[in-house]
Image 1 (cartoon, rainbow, N blue to C red):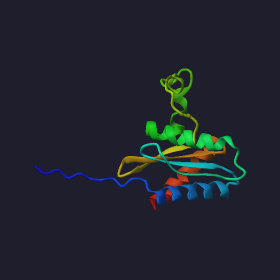
Image 2: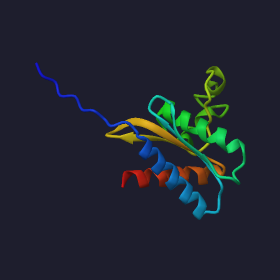
Image 3: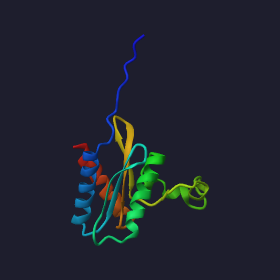
Image 4: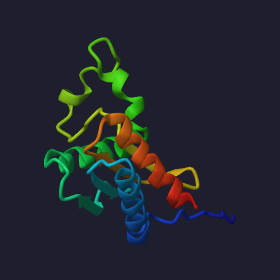
Length: 142
């Protein structure tokens, strides 16, 4: 009996650098200083960059957004309502000893329909961070 297994290419360092560069270019075009984090499918750091003028905490928020998007395989923007006091995930941020952050700006990265990593952007308004991460995914898909 023969089975054909399809192998999904992991997120490479070159992919991560493309994501960082594209997110930073989108942020720069908007006049926003940001931090960008890219994680692989295991949650390990592939790339990180903090603009000189980005607020210091943006490094932490970009990483937590990427981690949250990866672990829940969803854009962090889609999760914000779920952790509000009446939401089904209300206790999730405190129930787990994990660096989760439910603020827009984190997106999972998929290849062949499978998660291969995540990108997180911090430093702008949540909607801006989400847009910068989305621009990076579009560039990677080219």
